[in-house]
Length: 286
Image (tube, rainbow, N blue to C red; front, side):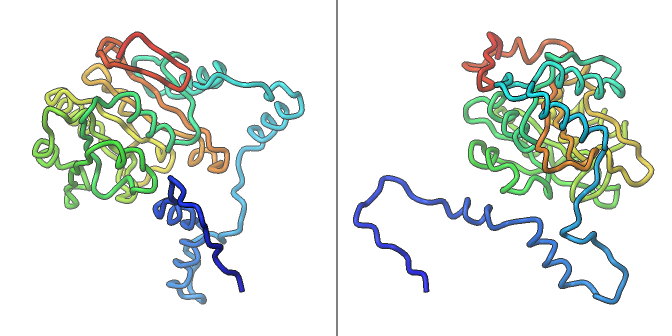
């Protein structure tokens, strides 16, 4: 039987119970719990937890080619390879009236890291941020809850879970710097209409806050509303969009995401902030 070793030295650090809990939270564990609630003889509602997700063979071959060539072994720019940034910009531009360039895109280790960066580089001291309720659990966006005051806005369930703009107004003050949205929304499952997103952009402009849109589920749209990117309204309000390969290409294990700045009027570069650092990227603005 294993015993816990005793320490004679009182070290000046301690473990984190939050980290311990996060490490124990796995998709397999949650899937197993859900399976126990299902009728084993009924219609299957979940894929087998051990089944590998199939993705594009073209993408797999491209990765293999780079690995075998040895060209991917060197240090890459911390904001992403120019070719990758250009590819993401070109993909997003399909749905945008005003086009992005590679300089507007920053590659990240999954969408979670993109959220961390959005907070790190854009929030002012003593800032607060508006998050949806429900949405963005603590273990996913730990940097937000750790570094900012979090305030919540609500939805209108009887109106396809649209954002309750009155609840947004009530919790916004002079220290609010951004409203975060998820579109399509998880877990509500709705997709915001173009008219609703335009209303959000106009409200955010009125409140002098930016919109940060997590669009990682843009490829999983259900219902009548087509997906409309928030970047379409960057002529009204500064917009940051977040995305990743995981949902659209079935490669969550590749941990490849991005942050895109839709900054048509140069607001991000001309709004001063003491420091602006992307782990190696320095800018005289912000």
